[in-house]
Length: 89
Image (cartoon, rainbow, N blue to C red; front, side, top):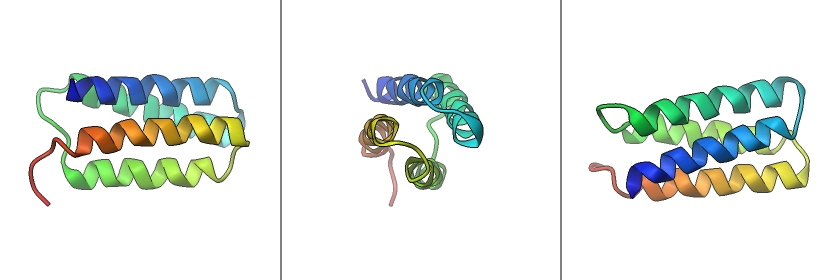
């Protein structure tokens, strides 16, 4: 189930990208791709990489309208749930 959180976060980021424009849309699309790759990679991403994703998504959420920001927040929640399964820290 844990990898499904990353796949869901990817889908949500892609949806958010589709509902906005400009640089935020491009960045969200890039994060959707990154999260998709993480969800199918041979190894789990580490805490640092996940923390970076969370931080960057939070920054993008501040640049978009409330509805898109809510979708980004939902994506962040899925990343956080996955992060709980990663060993360390």
